[in-house]
Length: 612
Image (cartoon, rainbow, N blue to C red; front, side, top):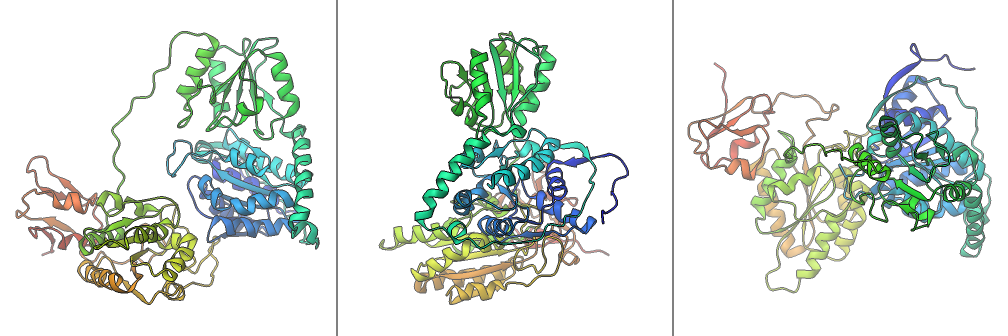
């Protein structure tokens, strides 16, 4: 029986990721998995919210990493259900192995791989283009220009996937994921599709002999998809018989359409929007090159469409240098490219830049105490870091390297092997968050134990995935929809990796925590890996039990001589310099009252305020 429609108004203002989640639910997605990563994080959490609201038969899950998330969702589509997996662009690297193989084996139910790109980048190690990964895997990719189109393309992606039995990538970017737009309010219809896995080892467990045939089939699918009418490019202007044409994709399409209208160029220059950058439609390519002698391609981040047009004489864009190869394509840049292409004089000035405020850990963040203690316990160590909000330990001089998820442990091993034959090798201290440890740190720790690497691992356990919005970890005991789950004990896991020395301490008990670290460093020099679990909840996690601040309001006495030690070495945002006295004061609006700073001032000038 069809559920009642949930809307009062025909439209509502939705975040791009919320619009994608709505598209998944409307299209009958039965299994959705993800690992949190900006700008994709809100997709799964929004879908879980919609599931609770509608009672849809949907399994939504935060997986331990992107590879596992992919494999869970892919098995669901092998059973004939519509499924989806979402991640950020660097997360797709983690899932690359199953992605490449799934493209060969194909699908039964619809399977959508959502990879949210971060041109800029705003919160990523790279601004890589997931469309190139789609080309490498040989799967089609759809490129939405707005939240509304992202929702619409979810349905197209499922139709395309089931029509050709192939995984389909949806590639929103930050400006789509985090923009807001009116979209139709959810009209939910429960789906009746039942799982039905058909055993076919020649396909689902294909040996290399059969993979060659699967590759041939994949190439045939791509050739057919290049003629699929539903995802063909759209012509956005009425210009006819003009030599000039602009081809746009993604957010650049939305910018270009507005700019062309404002400049009155609709009858002089043809504008085409490509929604399926790969494979580029064969007929479109032929018609474009036959009708126009001067073509500009505006896309981000790489020249994916441009390279498929393969005509360097008539086509310009990223590869030719006409469009910047680095950073986001902001509206000002799009307008300047169009003005130059159209022969218009004048340039749009870039937006004025404002001085950057260096990002820092929150006031009261337990990681700040951990890093301060690390510097005290091992002042001349090599500090290998990892991916998370704790990367900001670099501000405190306690992070020397950041490569990718889980690399803190592997790089600690690399530095150990580089220095182990030196007469006085340096201490090595690696830091990794609890979620990142589950994601990619466990295999690296096992390897370090086997190799006898002499280092200290400080496992920053704030009981959540803090940087991406406080999603649960395997140790939390709750799932994406708030359901109770089994918990993994981190101490037992660490010892299960073969670590003999593992201690848990509260970094906000600074002096005791520093002693624990010094002992661990001493142990590591002689015996091998030592792990210190720095356990204290994130202040922003709504699930934590609210308690009164241990120190309460703090103040700075006249003993402060303005030396700046606390600002340089502790860098709490609640500490500021008073311009008149040139001494430190504590901003009560920012201070969390954690009290860690009570022990750091060389002059003992920081004290708790006592009420009368």
